[in-house]
Image 1 (cartoon, rainbow over the protein chains, first blue to last red):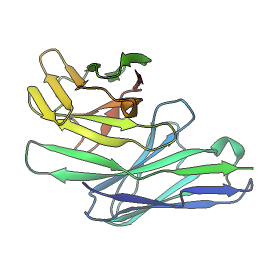
Image 2 (spheres, rainbow over the protein chains, first blue to last red; image 1 turned 60 degrees about the horizontal axis):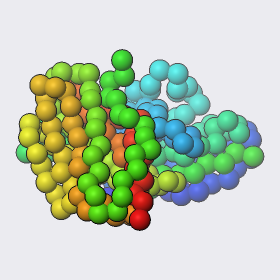
Image 3 (cartoon, chains in turn blue, cyan; image 1 turned 90 degrees about the vertical axis):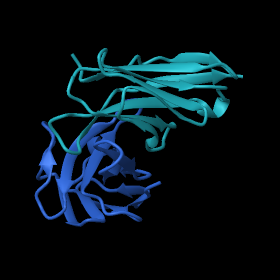
Image 4 (tube, rainbow over the protein chains, first blue to last red; image 1 turned 135 degrees about the vertical axis):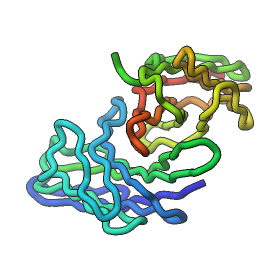
Length: 120
Length: 112
């Protein structure tokens, strides 16, 4: 299957600092990458959708100036949490979309292993 | 109405039995359907995808799709304790080439 990596897997930072998370599709070119956040015992929350070379589309309620997304190539997207605060502590997961022309019209999403962010 | 609905569970099934997970969706034009498994503290893992009405089998897993009823299910045969996880149903919305909407997940517990 398609492999997506994420780095770092875990990060602890002080309040007010910025944290960058990288997401890479290792064995395929991803037409689209997605960033999710998941709080304990809650479901995935889509934060934004990014296509290579264009601005990310943010979901309602997600601050684009706080969560900066850069999709520089078909295999790399980054999420920067700027001026992080304790309430930003969460599990951040990226996924990459593999578009298939056959069978059927569809595109599966493959998830990275996630980054656990703790802001102290 | 949520776009993708699942019973949150927990669903408890004895080891060796068939676990049946259900999902309904609201967008009648949806074309692609996915099941993901998520262990606690881990990211989701794609188990199955299905595009056509009927059944699709892969090992112990069978996905079933009924577009007329807007219903998709996942059957797990010979359930094992290692199948205990949260199962997420996901649907690709008709209006988007790639965006997938996830249900909130069903927690499955296989009791030995």
